Amino acid sequence: MNLYQLLKASFMEPKKRAAVRIMPIGRILKFVFLFITLLSLISFAEFVLGIGSSSSELEGLLQFIEEIEWLLYPFALVFLFVSTTLYHFIKISVFAAFGYGFLAWLKRRGEYRHMWRTAALAVTVPTIAAYAASFWINSLWISLLTSLWTLFLLYSAARFYPKAPPVRKQG
Image 1 (cartoon, rainbow, N blue to C red):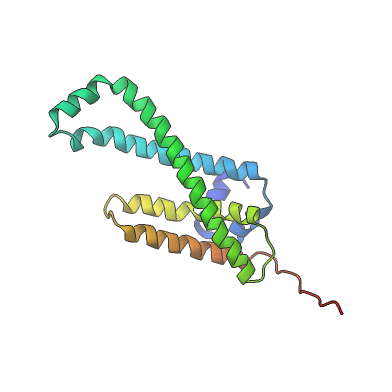
Image 2 (cartoon, rainbow, N blue to C red):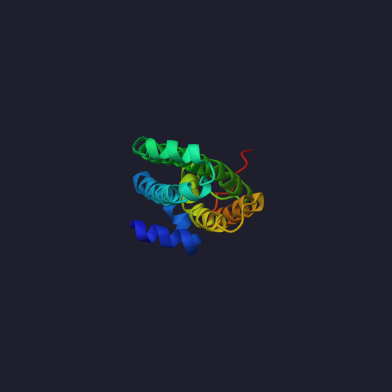
């Protein structure tokens, strides 16, 4: 699958989200880093465009920012990319652990690394929805709802993993 097909699968196809378990990790990481880069650039644009309006009443702060603008923006972009990457990888790893639990609960065959690849796609749509909703609503409920949505996407993908072989009793 190419990157566009991965994005499409993350939006609407649980069977293909489950199928990425056999893809090379490099392609999944390329998708994740491209997604993180887009999130970082959008957040950076929001930061650059919004800094003047939020601090317009603080004259000294605004003057200080204008003086160090050449230094502030590159460091802000790098820090934003690194922190977004760290947050996103932790989020994928935590959801992959829940997904691995779904595999055991559903008696499906799979490993944590397989579920990590599936979770990388499953967090995409809820993350976009949470980011879009943050413009209108700033609430903890958004995080809770998108987390539950991600868990549902992982559960629906875990149902398409192969069944575990029956356990034979030795006697």
